Length: 100
Image (cartoon, rainbow, N blue to C red; front, side):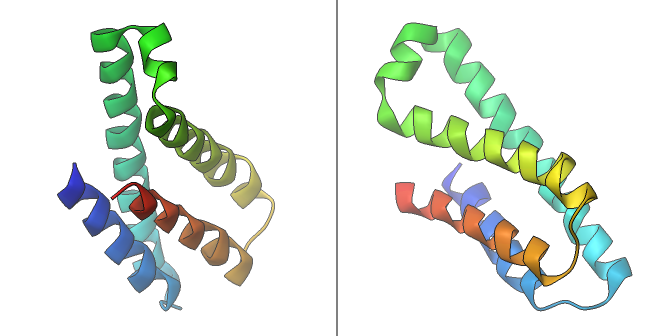
C-alpha cells in the first residue's frame, strides 16, 4: 500500500502542472482508480477487524476521512468548480503521506 500511496502522490504533483485537458482527463481516471483502491482497503479492514476495532485506530479514521473528502470533492464539488482551485484541492490529498 505504501507504493500505491507514493505513486498516487507523484501523479497528483505531476497533474498539478498539466494544462492540457486531455492529459488531465487521464490523470482524473487514475484518481478514480486510486479512490477505488483506497475505498476497497477500508472495506477490507472493516470486514477483517470489525467496525468497532476499525474506529479504535486513529489512522483508520484518518484514511476514511480522506476517502470521504475525496468522494465529496471529486463527485460533488468538482462538478461545480473548475480550474486551478480544483487542482489545489486535489493536492491536499498528499496528506495521506503523513501516515508514512
